[in-house]
Amino acid sequence: MNYTNILQEIYQEIQPYSKMGAPASYIPELQRVNPDRYGICLYTIDRNEYAMGDCDERFSIQSISKVLSLAIGFSRMGDRLWKRIGVEPSGNAFNSIIQLEMEKGIPRNPLINAGALVMTDILLSILSDPEKEYLAFVRQLCGCKDIQYNESMATSERDTGFLNAAIVNMLKYYGNIDNDVERVLSFYFRQCSVEMNCRELSRTFLPFADHTHPFSFGDISLTTSQVKRINAIMQTCGFYDEAGEFSYLVGLPGKSGVGGGIAAICPRKYSVAVWSPRLNAKGNSVMGMKALELLTTKTAISIF
Ligand code: GLU
Image (cartoon, rainbow, N blue to C red):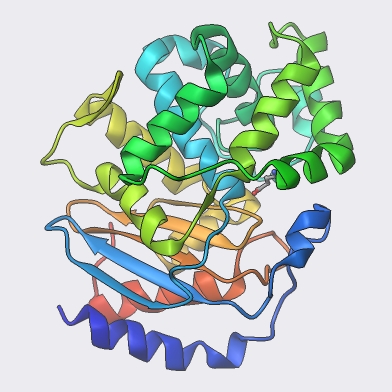
């Protein structure tokens, strides 16, 4: 497969979309990013890297971090997790609160905000130094020692994070949060503030695609079956209320973030990370989605 040529063709073909959409505005710090950035990196399971565009510039991974939190929680708690969080697509916006009240404080899945806030609460209870251990895991997955939280991004989000505060308070009301509400919010916003570039993000997701190596990083390990289940959750719940559309157009498990990043995997073949900050109305990167749609069309490989 000539991935170099394919990535170049994709770059040409997505140009008509380059001014469509707008960066997320509800987190003030995200507005400082140049909206015209575009980077992509594909990393194969035989460790070949194909990158182009702004693939060395770090960006805020935002909700993509929810997959990494899930990996830690699932590794430590196993199926006990599912007493507190479901595995069904929500069909609602990532920060919706309506469903949570109807379903009495059990979030639909770990990849929407409510689910990730419960996961954050779980991590606070099971990790002895949560911020440090979370970052250590992410650095090991990525193979990069200088991955960091962006503290000004986390503070900026806390200053305007009224809806997330409402969600965690409702969860607490229903008895699904054990720790202090402010503590949950501050760890959650830190996870969202982790910064990576496309090369680093594609490496971070390779273990989810690579069933030939055990998923084992420090004291976090997952069975092949658990990796399969995380991929299934990405497939059905990874794109807010556009998960069906992403499945239909792209056909890979993945997760998007409001920083404009998308990480996706093609099981047993590659992981791919794409970044372009302009988002569509559902909060997914316009060029990122189009690039991945073209990738699976041109390679004629997806999970379907
Ligand atoms: N930090 C963002 C929030 O909680 C993450 C949203 C996202 O990337 O989907 O609203």
